Image (cartoon, rainbow, N blue to C red):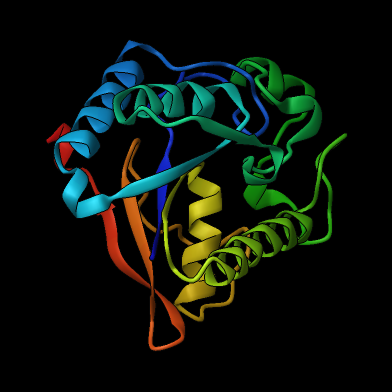
Length: 204
């Protein structure tokens, strides 16, 4: 049994992300369609049985194209959302820089919340909890199905730190997570390991 993490397709530049509900641009749509086709054509290698998606628009749109190709339903979940950046979500960068100069994710203290949002440590704790939950759930299912989770770069980055045994902070250099990249996690001798990183064969 494997867990596949997928970052959403390319969305609009020039806006703050986080809990933004802005959707994919045309490039992101094409990336998502190609990923869906790639997973269908290589079904024997991936054997996806279940799709879970962050309910933020850029992720849910990505998952729709994948689900259509694989003919699988999408389970929407708030738990797999990116960092909650509160009032800055979806705000144009120019406006955010005027109203909240110097306020970025990596400028926050670990226990400092975005206005109306969450702190880096709350973000980490939320992702750690949901990731451990999906791992436990799938062990209980006796390794019988592979799950694909469409989520966000920041979420995948936290999971990389957890599995590689590295301390995570909001100021660490992130691991590579290209748009619509695939990251494979597998249970190897009772330990979850990343066995495939940032796979983008479908868009090369």
